[in-house]
Length: 151
Image (cartoon, rainbow, N blue to C red):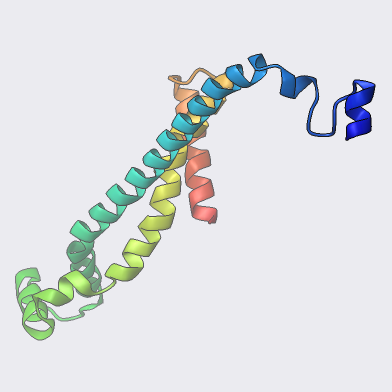
């Protein structure tokens, strides 16, 4: 290194880029902007997943009742069958049966489907399909749903 300094050359960590501060100053706001965009994307995905999981938890008793009524072959009225179901399995059974599977499904599928929709829609704008157009919405929804279902 002493020989390089004496010869007027810079070492491997020193060079034209390390001697000027202009490129570094220009890169700092871009990094902050990229960080903000990444934060928005993660927030969008997180809220999408949470909202889907909350909806699944609220509607789970309805799904349990629907399946139980479909499987019940008795000739009783719907209210009689619901009353028998609650009496036999308890009200908690309506809320807990199938809930883990439903939450897992929505945690993956719903998060990807709703989280990716806006991102895909904005990327379509870059390739010439207007973000607000019906075509852009259909392509974004189909792509996001397809990716979510595939995973």
